[in-house]
Image (cartoon, rainbow, N blue to C red; front, side, top):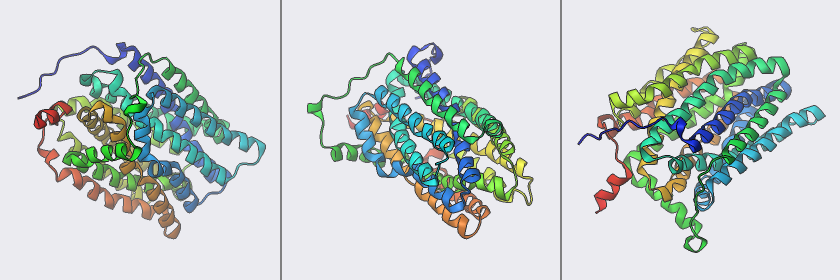
Length: 423
């Protein structure tokens, strides 16, 4: 039977979603400003090489590997709005120490490692709570629209952020740009405080041992065959993207001879693919189906990967960076909106935090490994070799969902479908 889709009012008329949307907007723009600025600080001010940039990427994602699993159980026990606000404020304070240390003349690569670790730890809790909070404040039929709108924010930030960041770095310097990002997290926390929904965590007497609750999240993820395929695809692609991402700034600035403004402009123009992906996901999902859109979006990821290792030889650097970013951001956004909406609808609400944490542990826990691998390979050979490895590996990542039941499925199961199967 085909599911009927009732037309619902826009989520922008929903007070709590509007505050979440504005908080995300402030956070995403600031993050894009600083993501480029921090890497430029390491390369330009501290003369970081390939290995140091790989280690910096490792510290940025290390918390997902170390505390990713228990974070979900903790989030399910706490008030999610409080977790989100606290994480924003921790990130603001940590980032603010970088421009302060630069101003005092005491900035070191070790401080940058420490800040990356602190920001990454706060991000673990923020991301788990964030993806678990959306289904609490909107109705189940609105989850897909909510994810699409939030992905659109991220895409717009990815378009304007790098271009604006490159211009700001040239105008006021990387440290001041990082300071602006710290302020954006404070702004995000203010909007989150305006959300009216107050979740009631489970009573203390109902809590079970932490390892029992963690195992429930893992059992749910790995007990669902479709989720296992999605996790394998996402984890392997994140491993590759963290390898190439660790080398991106040093590759563009040193190997390709671009300056900060050129790199930011190319990345900003290329990030328009993310906005197109966010806008295209609802009609693509209706046309292709909820299941098929996931593997087909991964296939569009492959062509963009070949352009970066060809940059400066066969393809002009600005063209390679722009077009590659365009294809990659389009496919990633379509894929993420589709698979995140699927797992949010599939998972029972009391298990959302642990489910999201289990998946984050698997798909983000590989990223510190990827960053370190990228640094080692880049310092042993060169950054271009890392991009060739990333392109070759993209075929393996896509195969997990392309050669799966998803390619034949139009509608995906919901939590109610799972319950009816057990009755």
